[in-house]
Length: 102
Image (cartoon, rainbow, N blue to C red; front, top):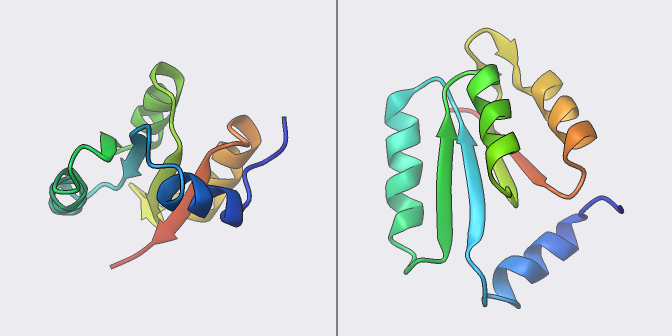
């Protein structure tokens, strides 16, 4: 399986809007999780949002549902978001990962 490249992701999100996009938000801040869920849920059913507050919750969510995009904080409960990103990309090469910090 080939990894998903940014242009493929953008095409999936904006050119092929037939199916909802599954987003996994990983952050140890409840406020950030609620905020991102709120913003994405206002997009007319375009996004299905899952969330995880820890590394283990994130991987449990990745195992139980198809995830198109992971939105990941740069630090999650003392774990490096960069390291977590590498692990996600190795185990789910077709999942796009967006890293952010507030």
